[in-house]
Each structure stands twice: as C-alpha cells, then as structure tokens.
Length: 539
Image (cartoon, rainbow, N blue to C red):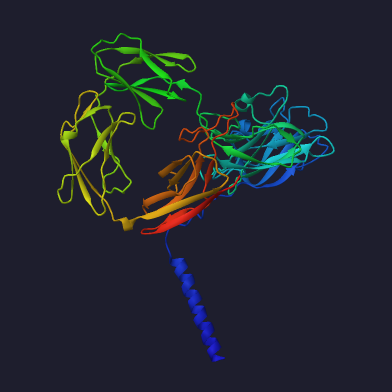
C-alpha cells in the first residue's frame, strides 16, 4: 500500500509540475493550421434532386459562412434560362445561398445549377468547386452520364481543375460558340485525378471539350487557355469513355503597338507565327542609315535595329503575307540610351562531354575574328577549335574536343567580335573544367510496341527541360552516353509531319496535337553505371 501511495504522490507531482510549466509559458498563441477545407452543403430547400419542382426560391445551407465570387459569370444553368436568377448574398457573408427564379420553367425538364467555383468560405476563399443543384419539373431526373479522362498533350503531369464542357449540337451551334457562350453542362477534374464525370444529362448530340479555364469564366480563350476536344459528335446515351488531350493552340495572328526599347532598337510584338511577317518603314529614312530585323530568342518579338538618326517619330507597316493582313503604326521617339554589346556564356564553370560553349549577344553580332581567340588546356598547350556565328539565335558557338579531368582557358581579345553598330568586345576570359568518365552514366533504350517513324526520343529533367534528344526514322538502339547522375524523364514524340518538332493542335481545324508518350517512371542515372531500359508503347 505504501508503494502505491508513493506512486500516486510521484504521479501527482509530475502532473502538477507539467500544469505549472504550461501556465508559466509565455508567448503568442498559435492561430492553428490554415483552413483548407471548402464549405460543405448541409441542407437544401427544396431538397436536391427534387421532382415535380414548382418553387421559385432555392436555399442552399452550408456548415460555415460563405460568400459569392463572380457568381454571375460562374453559374451555369442547364437548360439555359431566359432571365438570370437573382442570387444572394452579394457583397457580404452568410451561411446560405439564395436563388430566386425569374423564369417560367419548362415542363418535364431536368435543370442543373452548376455554381462553378463561385461559392467560397468567408475566411480563406476555399471554393466549393462545381457544386451542383439539380431538380426536375417532371416525374424523373435525367440520369444519363458521360465519363472520361483528361491528360496533357505534351507534359507528363496534367494541370488540376480542368473544366470539362458539353455543348448541345442543334441548328444554332457553331464551333466558335465555345468562346462566346457558356456550355450546357460543365464539371471539372478532381484534385488528385484527371477523371471527369458529367451527370444528369439528357439524350442528344453534343460537342465535348476540356479547358484549363484561366479566367474562370466558363469560356475558351485561345490566348491563355489550353483546350482538348473530341472531334466526333457525342451521341447520348453512350457507354464510351473519352480521352481529352489538352494543348495550347498557336494563337490567331495579331500585331501589337511597337515601341522604342533603346535609342537604336524598336520592338515589334506579335501573336501567332512570325515567319510571314514583313516590316516596312513608311517614313523616309536616309540612305546612310543601316537597318536589321532579328527575332528575339524565346519571345514573340521582332527587333528592328537601326543606326541612330534624328527624328520625332517613325511610321511602319507590318504585313502578314500569308493572310494578307496589313497594320500601320506610328512610333514616337523617346530619350533612351543606346545599347552596348554584352556577351553571356551558357556555361561558366563545368562542361560535360556533350556540352557546347556559346556566347549570346544582346545586339546582333555581325562578324568574328578567330585570330583573336585562343584555347589552351591546364598544361598551357594550345588546342584546335572551331568557332562559328549562329545568326538566327545570335550566338557565337565554340566546338572543341573535350578530354576528362581537364581545364580549358578561352581567351578572347578586344575586337574579336563586332556587332551591328561596329561595337566590339572587351577582353574576355573563361575557365571551364571537365570531370572524369566515371562521373557519368550511360543509358540505352529499346523501344517496342506500336511504333511509327519518324520519332523524337527526348531525355529531360524532372521539369521537362530537354537534356538530350535523338531523331530516328527507323528502328535502332538509342544510346544516351556520359549523362550527369540525376533523375530523368523519357518521352517519345511521334513526328507525323517529319519536321523534327512537336506540333500542337487546332480546335477549329479539328487537328489534334502530335502524340507524346512518356516512360511510366522516372529513370535514375548513376555515376559509373550502365543501364538499359525497354520502352513499351501501346496503342
């Protein structure tokens, strides 16, 4: 008994000490974890899925305070109502949404109210995504459904919250309606899957599309949105499961207002393709003035370079010869500094055995003098090299034989490079090293299954950036040698038009993007390691 009492006493003292410690602690109280849960519908009046519906007012009750965001844009009623319903609360918070109907409803018709992402909680704006309220004015609810999967046409991972839309094909339907009018039915892919399920549908003929709806307005904007579509008409009811492949179209051509970027450069922005663009000055330009038009790498911009002269403004016409579109622009001069030549190397420390050193210029490079460039190794031995000007990308590219465990010193004397304005470079020095062959791994790929040639086999990092690629017109063993240790993705592009590029699709032309298939898992390449994988492609 004494032992038991001592145990209780010790326990009580420990408990008391802990309690006093907690009481003595000072500090800011924690706000707790951030609320990430969406509002939950707990009751509806009349009940969801009601039949013989005659009410003019609907109330949806939630488990927390909610507010409405862009509900007039987000709400889709199917079939469409002639008059927009009155919806509250607007500009405040409540625990319910009230909908007052302004139309006389059709007889024996199933109505679906899809609220998109307009209902959010009051504190954190978590949406109750695509909440749907359904009723019928007849004896039954339309019960047809349509299922499928959305996948990205080019990337391994598909975006979340893809809107899947169904448009009824009737006498007024045209394909352009998807950018003008919300769909008859809509749903979205879920957080962790790309599966969709459209429910409470009526029989008929439909067009099925998927949109990454950046503006959240239930319309397709080809400038910012991705789209996927089924080319054939959907005839409900159907047991088919559909695949929608999501891609971004090349936008319709348009030219934007040009502007001075520097005292010697005007930039001409555009959307669409630039290959048929012609820029002509209408203003009189002295014969002594030199001009040059060059594409800005990685941007939808053409640079109009010119040797400076005094003028208040310049007038240009921009012509797209393919579609015979002509725009006229006036560009007013600005007090800006003239660009000076800057050269940026693509490698500054380490070269792999498959890397190439390139210097990118900010001004078009016109000529190079190889006599003012030298390459030596760590033993001060002069080495042969080739140096060429890539005018399209405005780069100077160096090619030389690389050896393991070597250090290379590249010396570029002043005036080795001359730009469009006859500016030349200052003295430049670059030090680059290579590793050992054992620092890298080798990967061999055998492709089996449903294969059509030509194809591009691309090895990328886990973000999809291309590290190596091989173009093939017939079956072969694909080898990626001397690869830095890392995790890689592997994909095949089936190059249907043999242009050695991936080509996107076009909705109005019913053109699907070129097929891309990924190896199912990441591939780990280790140092001093040989790995062979079989890449099986199914239909």
